[in-house]
Image 1: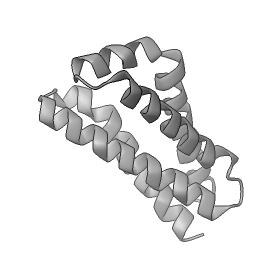
Image 2: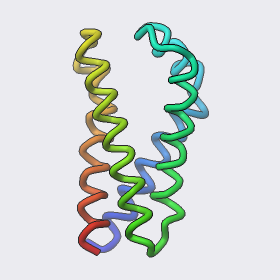
Image 3: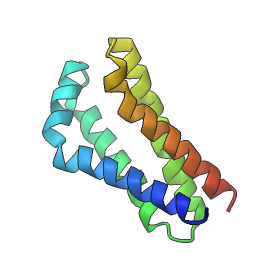
Image 4: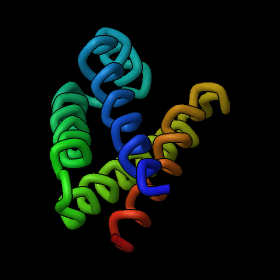
Length: 113
């Protein structure tokens, strides 16, 4: 059970890196579709990548990992609100919902370590 938090943190960080770096063109299209300005898109990306880095480089620092996990959970909660307000399908909401749940699990482990 000790390895589970590390696996979750690596999964979250990898998913965020993949979406915000490798598939950045898709992010541009989504933010245009949601009528959000480019500066919010860029700020969101910087913050998400920073929180994801905290999960991985936090090492034994539970406070840093907790901050990263709660930050990602907050951003994923905001993503859910945007998806609900724009009426997207559950299929499009599912990735941010999964990351929301996983980041809350990560926060739980970090808070109790």
